[in-house]
Amino acid sequence: MKDTRNVPLLQTKRKDIRAYRFDLPDGDYEVELLFADLNARSERVTYDLGAVATLDNADFRGSVFNVSVNNRPWLNHFSPAIEVGGNRCISKKLHVAVTGGNLTVNFEAVKGMTFLNGIKIFRIH
Image 1 (cartoon, rainbow, N blue to C red):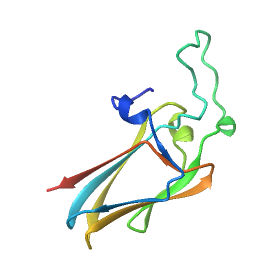
Image 2: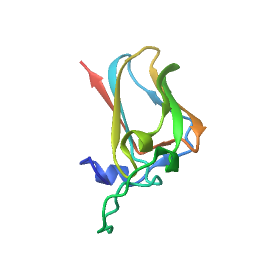
Image 3: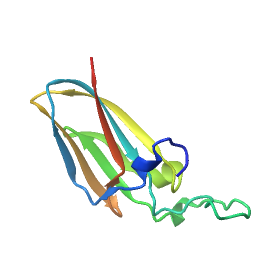
Image 4: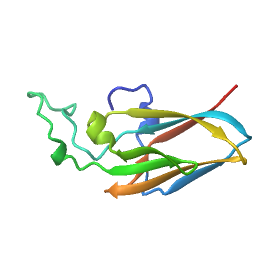
């Protein structure tokens, strides 16, 4: 795994998810989603001692999906593999105002499957 200090967190993932719901006190929060497409081809694997291969986004086996938070679109046609390559971490952060006592993160597959490696939620004071 490249570009992260969260290696243990990113070695697993939840796949084909539709939503996560968190019961939280009303207030302002930062939501951080962590992704690493472990199935997409990477530009170089650790045991590859040869030259770096060129990447062609059409060859990625990666997934493409939409993410919304509290029914508001956030990430549209998002593909971690296309943005950063396979076996690399990408983190997306959003500030959210929670009202009504819950925070819902929804996932909708466009191509392949939805997945998430980690989620962090911090209350902003």
